[in-house]
Amino acid sequence: MQGPLIGAFLVILGTLPAVQAQTIDSSTRYASTGVVMANRSAALGAKIMGRVQRVSHEEGDRVQQGDVLLRLESLELQAELASAEASLSLAKTELVYKEKLETRMRRLYQAKTLSEEQLDDATFALAAAREKARIAKAAVDRAKAALKETVLTAPFDGVITAKHVEIGQLTEPGATLFVLEDQCQLKFRTNVKEQDVARIEKGDKAVVIIDALDGKTLQGQVSKVIPSGDPKTHAFVVEIDLSPHDKLYPGMFGKASFKD
Image 1: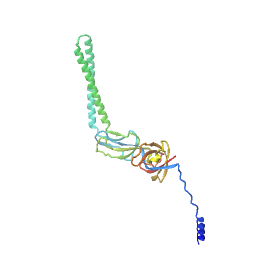
Image 2: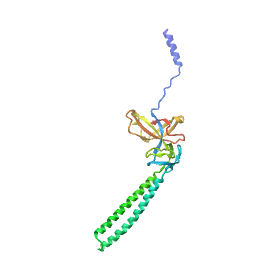
Image 3: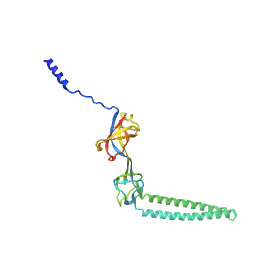
């Protein structure tokens, strides 16, 4: 019986389609998944304490470098500046008088009609007047700098992605009031396994697939390989500059691949 059974099995096997072996492109290796990030991101806040007088922009607004984001109340600082400028004006007037007096005293001393001690007094008074004027000028500079800090401006072109301030709020130095992102150039940040990072260099071509764009494939170039891995995961951070795309935003999830 074994002969006929073996023959039948061979006949059935011969009718099955041949299995095609899948070929894997060994030149491609996939990094860990990552996210799209803005080229630059900055948390903006006031350097001084003050009450918010005006908020000029909201989340989602596009701003240009130098645009005013908010203003703080400044009446008190304006009064301090006016007082400092008045003190400086008085110090300058006194300095001019002391300079003329010292010049007159020196001539009298040279004519031997004035003692050396009197000349020393005039010279000392002139030096003191110069120092007083310098101190008054520094006070004006400080008052101007403080007044300038009542206006918060955008340090670069970008999009406001977060706002944590309202009119009437009392600001604290260093507290984040806005988050500004430069989205003109986006990058993809991913973690690469330690066995792959040695084969990736700055300038290498890369392909990034973005899930939120229905698997859209974007061409990119490695802009940064951080040469220090995570001691727990043994992964290394790699950043890729991405080609422009209208619907590409920071925070989108994706996967990067590299070519040997």
